[in-house]
Length: 123
Image 1 (cartoon, rainbow, N blue to C red):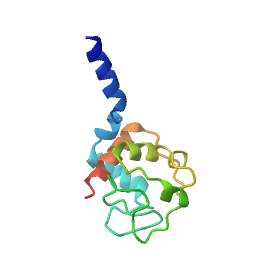
Image 2 (cartoon, rainbow, N blue to C red; image 1 turned 90 degrees about the vertical axis):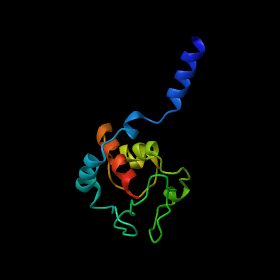
Image 3 (tube, rainbow, N blue to C red; image 1 turned 45 degrees about the vertical axis):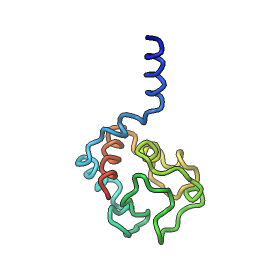
C-alpha cells in the first residue's frame, strides 16, 4: 500500500499542470484574438511584433525564420510544451529574463489553459 501511495505521489509531481492540458480551444481562440492577436499571428510565416505562433507546441524556442529574437530567447533550449507555454504566458519576462515581449502575463490559469489548448490546434 505504501509503495502505491509513494508511486502516485511521484507521478503526480512529474505530471504537467492539469490546467495546461484541460483547456477549451474554442474559448482559447477568443482569448487569443482579444489579447494575443495584436502582436502574434496564428498563420504560417506571418510574423508581427512577435513571431508566428503556428505549430508552437513542441517547437524549439527562437525557431521561426525571419524573426529577430532576443538573445535570452535564443538561449532558451527547452521545447514549447503545454507546461512551458503555461509558465511563459503567466509571466513572460519572469519566465525568460530579457525577452522582448512586454505583455505582463495572463494571470488566470483557466484562460492560460484555454489559450494553450488553442495553440495546440495550430498545426
